[in-house]
Length: 173
Image 1 (cartoon, one colour):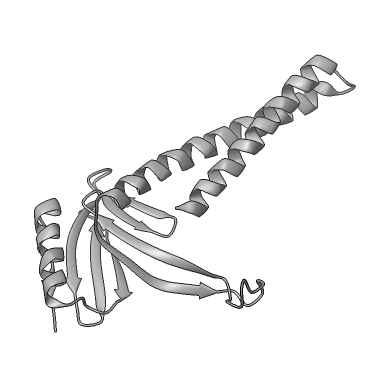
Image 2 (cartoon, rainbow, N blue to C red):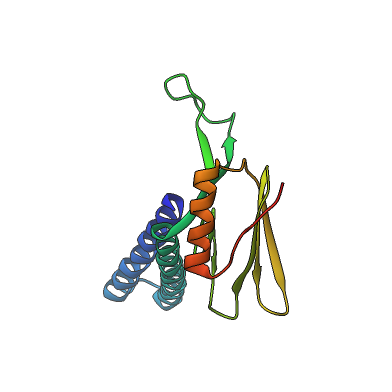
């Protein structure tokens, strides 16, 4: 989520730079300024479209995070090329949030009940969680290696899924 926000801020800054460049070109009118003005306008408009698309994606991601049923941190990525900070190697995590509104997996946002996409099934095994979602024509699957939680937490997760999505997770041995 933080990376998505950072990308959106960078794109907004680039779009604002293009707008400032466009205003400067219109005021100063250097030789061949029309070409540069069109280029700055086009780049700024493309940047704004990308910014608003990312903003919408961030709002959807925030909604999923705030209403999460399940939060899984399945992967920790370490980059040996990055410098150590206080003796520890920097790392990046890929998190998965599941809610009644959708799934957030890293940068990917899957929204339920829009464009025909629905949560179809949830299976919780001893060492994995499997989620089926999609339309009636195309069903996709996300399967994550994840240790099954203890009995009390598992019952709570099953109840949340049943209450918020209408889907009862299948628990397998």
